[in-house]
Length: 162
Image (cartoon, rainbow, N blue to C red):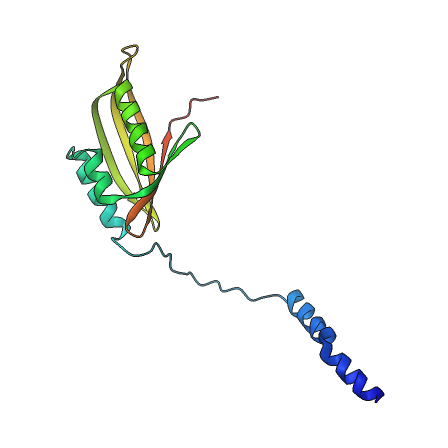
């Protein structure tokens, strides 16, 4: 009977727990081969990027570009540390900005295409309606793509020297 007890104790998981511990300590071999980047279904990044730049420079307008390429769940991030979530909030941000500034010209350069999105460079001649000050502003915008739509945009401006 004593032998059966020992055998049944072996089957209680004590020994297999020891085996699991040994496997955890063993070095797992990691593949050094590249893996494909997946961004879902829909138009490829390069198509969206080139069409975005063409539409912008042809003055198609924000609404036409948003309707064609942007997700309704868009997140927009500004360089000063704030973000807007959802197309309704992004449109409100754009309306506020346009109400407070006059854009005399704006050119979009690029695109600079990556695996998960693209970037463009905007150069704009802007006038602040409140004080009449006019300036040339440059910023980089990075757009992240998922399922053929822009799901996130981030604007990066020049940082003054410290």
